[in-house]
Amino acid sequence: MRADLIVVGAGLFGLTVAERCASEFGLDIVVLERRDHLGGNSYSEFDERTGIEVHRYGSHLFHTSNERVWRYVNRFTRFTEYRHVVYAVHGGRVYPMPINLGTICSFFGRMMSPEEARALVGHHAAEAGDADLQTLEGKAVSLIGRPLYEAFVRGYTAKQWQTDPRELPADVITRLPMRYTFDNRYFRDTYEGLPVDGYGAWMRRMADHPRIEVRLGTDYFDIPEVTPGAVPIVYTGPLDRYFGYYEGELGWRTLNFEWEVLSVKDFQGTAVVNYSDQEVPYTRIHEFRHLHPERDWYPDDQTIIMREHSRFASRSDEPYYPIHAPGDRIKLGRYRELAKDERDVFFGGRLGTYRYLDMHAAVASALSLVDNRLRPRFGARAI
Ligand code: FDA
Image (cartoon, rainbow, N blue to C red; front, side, top):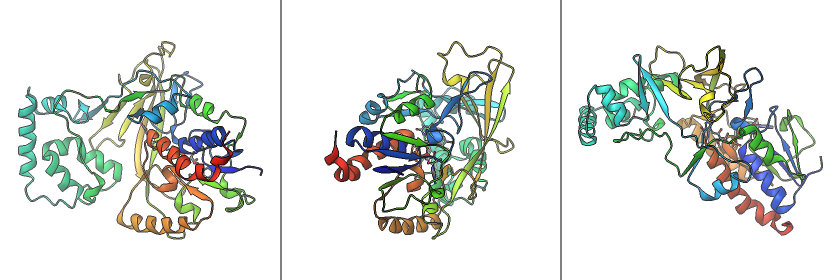
């Protein structure tokens, strides 16, 4: 295989590195991607039956306050004006998320000023008193009080983790967003929107460079002729797999997606609805047509929905969210030490660093790798 640099994984991290190294340094890049498409988890495609764009791995909303990232991604796509909102169903009623003044007033059944709402939530939180702050439940109750916790956090979290929140460690949550205004925009970044002609088109433009060759359906570990040390490698696959699980497996949560085409124009009136109650087996329903209200050509008699179920991942599952249990942190530290000794292998991205990264963070992190580690190595060849 003739290449100056091999990139393992065609997600946003790998594509950003490949595009920059081809365009800036004139390197010949081979990108190996085990799936049958570009874009990693951010990938989307147009459903053949309905013409509706679906996000194959769950709704992906682009948002950032990072000027450099925003300028960079706008080279490959324009963005729509979409602004994300989320609703939650609890006890058959619908509430805006994240918890805000609208949620609080509806839940307690009366109009409250911001100060009254703050005082009420503070009162409930204080009642938590001697809650065990080492557990997720104790910490959550101490932050937002028991009534809101029981309604919006307990069942949802139990479904996400398949574990009673009384048995989950407190550090699963760092904070619980709570707003004392009626602002229910989900993200607060400077820039937000969706790629006008889809993530698939955006990713294809990133890879569309004469010096970039993409090999889809190709697992790095199935190509014995690519040996570390012979050609520099940017590796964005799972860190533990790279080392043959030598230190044990890192824990991940995975998702099961249940797709359905319905013969109605509109199923739920918005893109994402959370289901907070534990009796409902899924955590969310996505309805993709609502991500693009500007597309007046979507069908009037069909819609696509996807129910999302969460569970622990086994080795053969797609890893989606790192768990970071204490045992994982110990293994991660050991893998990081091993990674330091890998000559000419640069680990990056969500899987390669065992870190949840939003899309803008994946791009920012890839640009930093190019600046800080690849430019010193290849920058002299800049074209
Ligand atoms: P990513 O996982 O996308 O790509 C890695 C690629 O490497 C994959 O395509 C994989 O197949 C490939 N690979 C792995 N091992 C390989 C091997 N041995 N050989 C060849 N190829 C290999 N972000 C956001 O900003 N807004 C959002 O709304 C969401 N929503 C969201 C929902 C869900 C369910 C998830 C799981 C994630 C999000 N994200 C998100 C995060 C977003 O998906 C994330 O930022 C990017 O996937 C990170 O890009 P990476 O390139 O690091 O990984």
